[in-house]
Image (cartoon, rainbow, N blue to C red; front, side):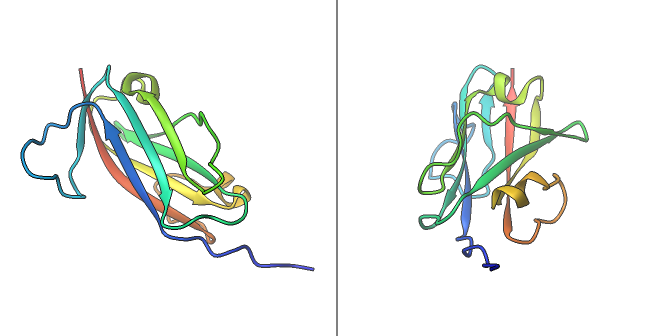
Amino acid sequence: RWRAAPALPPFTLEVTGGQSATRGDEPSAAAVLDVRAEAYVTVVARPAEKVTGPIAARAFYNHAGKWNELPMHRPASASGVVPWQGRARDLFGSARGSFPIEIVVGAPDVVAAAAPGASAPRGSSRLTGQLSIRE
């Protein structure tokens, strides 16, 4: 008997770490995190509410016109939080400057087939953000 997958709650993309180039008031949600290559960075897909059922995610970044995938270090938590953590140079290799980040999150079989820069497959969400890395 076929059953529909549970509805996916809304997710947010959080990129934190290093020292932001922005000083003063609280930065806007659209602010670009600016870090040094040696800085520790955390990229997180966080659900608005606990996820029921299996969840997976893939993270990509576009540098010099080429999409690259971030290596997965830890699976999703029981609540559906998916983190990537490490030094910027280890996660993003030689990428420097400002570039887009995308995360596709959803059921494992749907996410496995997801391609960067495309619309989100049915049953998944695509999160987008921006990161800037400098020496």
